[in-house]
Image 1 (cartoon, rainbow, N blue to C red):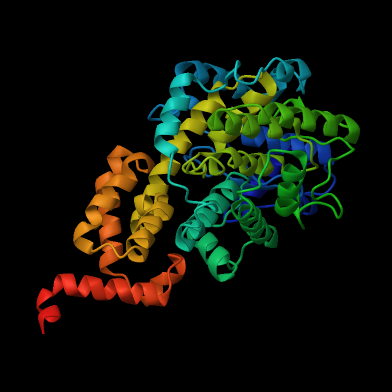
Image 2 (cartoon, rainbow, N blue to C red):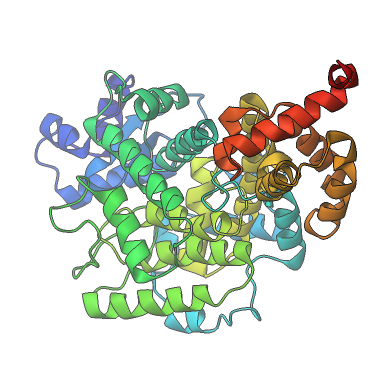
Length: 460
């Protein structure tokens, strides 16, 4: 007669690949679905198997003897991502699921949060993240978001967000798919769709950065783009009516479309009132996932929604770099079951530090000049004025110094002056369209510049 040992043995015989529950049932007939799910959950909790994906995309494989489980205990983590208080909370989540009390959505807990009075991130954390993440207008308003950096965001965020859902695409696989459209060989089609859906959702955010708002339309659009072809027809972007189950937790989400719609609108209205972009980002990350308003793809929607306050305030986006899947799952479950935000906040801050480091490396690789991008309108206005009013290059310094007194931050002025002088030195007909000057004005100033550089020409 089949039992849990039979299932474990079958997984070990197929150790080189991921197995769906349907394949297990076909190989071991006669096991009820609920019983099989329970056995598989127990094998995962004991570290004898690991799980990837959600709902219809869930797969399992055996963990070889001596290999650490997919969700290692917090005590084994180094260096400290989690504070001592968070470590103690995560120990409660790592207890066997049958020892933890059932929970559901707490309207009282959500209502107790008062925007700009309550805070999930400490003042120290918010100050640190702002110092790390503030950048020049690298998105839509200044038009300086270089395509290569945008591609890097597509790749990093698509890869990391999908990885946290158990997607087995490597970073190289993701880059090839996102940039070249070439799918990895031997990977499930659902994984390819998941990556491409991330690409479309991120593109939507970046292209609409000037008009984005944290509202129901935006969140449902994100869900539609992320869930298209991965959920039942007609459910992408739609608030669910029926009940759902969340694996690995005692948390049972609420059901009922009207109620979920009301609660989603309430939490988004609360989020819009939060002034600090990082606090708003974290609030969205936790609470959109907590409500589980959609039939699936809730955490992915929450992750992409959480970057809206960052990119609309010219901060480096949270790319969830180097987040361990087990740590993320445990921290999220602590949010669900205990209504404790500390572990997820620790993980958010750790990953944001890493996201900023990765972003800065990408900027260096592609040669993105952040100061030049930040002050491009001011630089062009000064160059245009110098040309139109026929100010000789030798006298241009006085005008540059006068114009940048109020418009340019003191720490950026030397670099700004160098950029203006370099623009003047390299000025030619190819640049006049962006300066608002005519060909005649350019020719007149270039003659003036040549006479100053070669005064003997004027004496001939």
